[in-house]
Image (tube, rainbow, N blue to C red; front, side):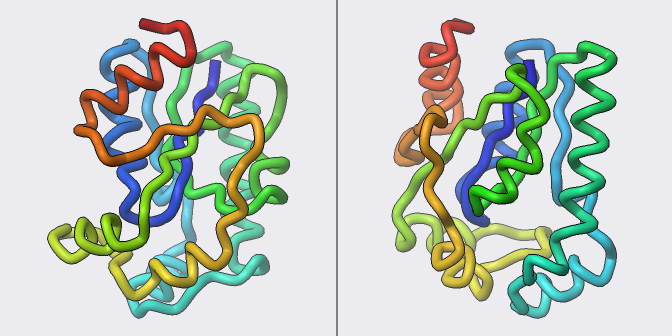
Length: 161
């Protein structure tokens, strides 16, 4: 199974994704690691990425997921996957499920203000919310609880508890 933990910047994708993978004994990957250096610099400067900027990134992610599927590995991928078209690109087969970390902008902005060591910050949040197309059919989890509670909720919804 491949779980893609998605949402806007600061929603907790990496934190929740790592914890979920650790609890399940699965591989973890962060989609940020697949960005071109130029895209990381754009995000660092608060410049939103366009669909054209994201195209090579999505292609690399798709190839990674196809390889993982071929090897039958269980994976948790932290990835924004903001638009339906991006999710369609990543939906390589029935083994892929999306988990949407949903939260209010003010809650996430507060988290971003206190976050250290990440290239994306509060400047990019408004553009991500404006691009976000909430997924249909995804497991949706409100992010008001602790990461441990969120992971428990995800596991219950997936019957992986």
